Length: 91
Image 1 (tube, helix red, strand yellow):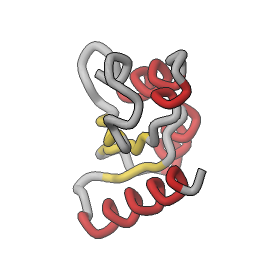
Image 2: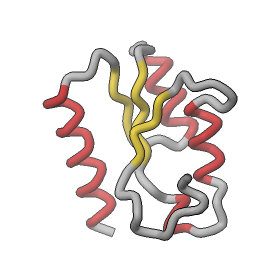
Image 3: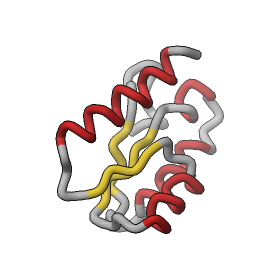
């Protein structure tokens, strides 16, 4: 969906890690490889039940800007989204 969208359509992506066919890490790497920098640089946050330090590192290595563990704490999620979007808007 990101590859066929117009730049600016999405502000950020909440990426599920465990998906069929292509997991969240693969999907993130595919987005980061898009030719249009405006699309390739969309902030991506991992959302997963995998909450170990190595899971956070895997998300970062795949090109994600953050990691949100399930069950979701809405306050923490909103704080992370605000933080990531404020960095994006500062560019």
